[in-house]
Image (cartoon, rainbow, N blue to C red; front, side, top):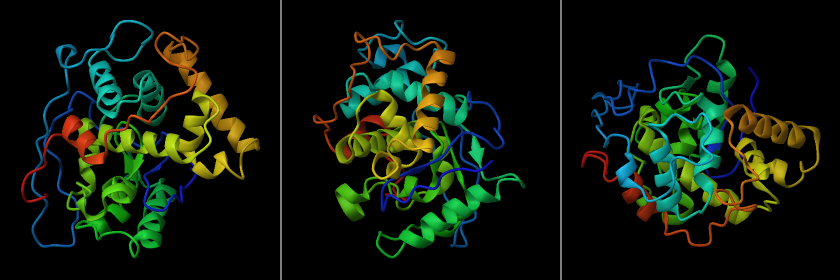
Length: 279
């Protein structure tokens, strides 16, 4: 399956759904399998907190969620509340439907026929490693492809937050398999959403998914065939999921990220802390 590769400097790269969907999304806080790091020792197993529950959020988990899995709704709502982007929770749900079909361990790039995905992560790493802080497991990320709930490209995921906080970005020492932890994937997606809203012209909700596919489509590619194709797929996904994007009581016509609290605050609210070996 061909996919668009994002060249957004140090921002996240994300791609479409596809590839092998491994295990079950119920393995939401499972220990991570070892990657192939540059060092002799394998990366430490990471146990993040379990999925948030209804009592952990304030927002409505019943209205206009359609077929979004009940156990994932609090995570999407927590993303909205921590990132302070009102209305974004259900948009995150529609994006996750496209990128992973809600499988937390979805992996694009681990199968024989997914060389294009591995090529994308390799290019992302090779083209950006000189201008970003080093990744402890950079080669593993380069060979990983993409994955997790939101289909994030591994090198960009590990560089999440670098444009805002530089070497303080929290995932620089993590392995790419951290993508399979839903809270970590949620952090990457929340930061990416904020960067799209802050840095690009977003005319409506569907434009967010265009930026998710390739930010250049919001500039020179606006109005072209790919721009319209991404919009149609996103709107079709929302209908399939039974989420009404025009319901202004749950999703405003335009999302606003002006109250963004900062990368480190969002990381603390969604992930908490990584083991000291990765800090």
